[in-house]
Length: 208
Length: 350
Image 1 (cartoon, chains in turn orange, brown):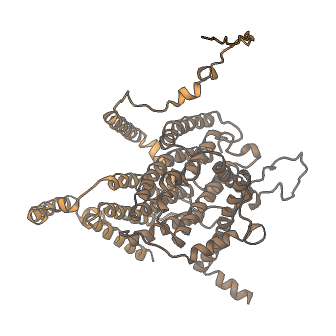
Image 2 (image 1 turned 135 degrees about the vertical axis):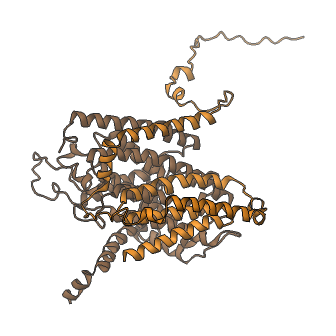
């Protein structure tokens, strides 16, 4: 049963990953990427890594890919233009691909992941919470690397914002704090007008 | 005969299916009558009567609406992507209903009692946005695509605030399991997490309103600007499914607010002996309390819609990023401080 589920989701993952690079429409490619993420999350669930699986869905499927689609939908990508010269460059591309695959294969080949290197992990009961275990490890043994990673991310965010931030002093935008801080005096001025009865002076009829 | 039924019920698959039906049918009925309640409540708030023609006092109105939508023709816009056009509402309803798998209705009444229930619900609601994105994109209509872009940005922004609000709850309960979160609030009404986490509670609910694209955050629909947003091209049953998903999500946000901040199925009179309730059902925890608390939040959704004008888009973004996220981050620090001080009755080290 478990192997069956594994093969279904792996097939989904590999097929959708292939579709990502082969479909014509970039928006469809992004949707296939979502499907591929989702299938890999399912495989992680099979490995009893439920925390990582759900975080993968929340972060990559729920946030990263939504923003990705947001951008892709607004771009006008002409696939015909991009695919021009595909046949001419094909031999070179294949050669590069084979070279890269060979490098990776000889460095980390199948033996590096065999059962002699990694023993089959223990199964845990339903009470075992790998969220708690992960939290304990992350905040004790690896607390410095965890915090350094967090700071690097923060620096990345600040750098990205400061690169794209442009001040446009001429644009008019709402200043909420000014609006809240406003007093009735600033908006409305009550002018005291003397209510003295003016003497009625009938307009003199000037006869000329 | 009874033995036969019991033996069939004990087959795991059948057992789970029966449980799913027991959750689904009342949920869908609630959705149907929630739409009726919405029209009535908003009607009375606006000094109108609301639907009163079909059946006594209009009670059959939601059923009439459902029948009408079921028998209407599904119109596919020209050059629309038909496959994605039909997958979109399916995805919306599937995630909206799948999230209910981990919602507990009592200390034992839960379909799937998983450790990461809270994260699972967040994941399901975050996948739900793809229903809207797919609908908008596959409709081949400019109003729909504008709505999609608005929704994508809005939901992603408010998910962060909502997630941080939930971090506070998880810190207080020290568990991602919803049953444990509710049990952590037992003792009395003052044990509910809404008191120490009041800012997070408010932010959670407002973010929930924004996540479900309800007024005053309904720029995704914005009928005065972009007709009806992402479902402008939808008709018949496909439109009805979007409607169903939206209301199921609203009820989900309400029940989650009741579970995480208002003690779920715990009685508000728990631990109060002065009232002399003794062992009566008012003092004991039961599903009635959970449903009553959920109903309060469901009413709030309707009240908001009748009260507030729609936010402008930049105001929504400002509220999410510049107000809610800073407040939640500060309050997570405050929760840590309360933990350090072991503030009773919430933060006692067990």
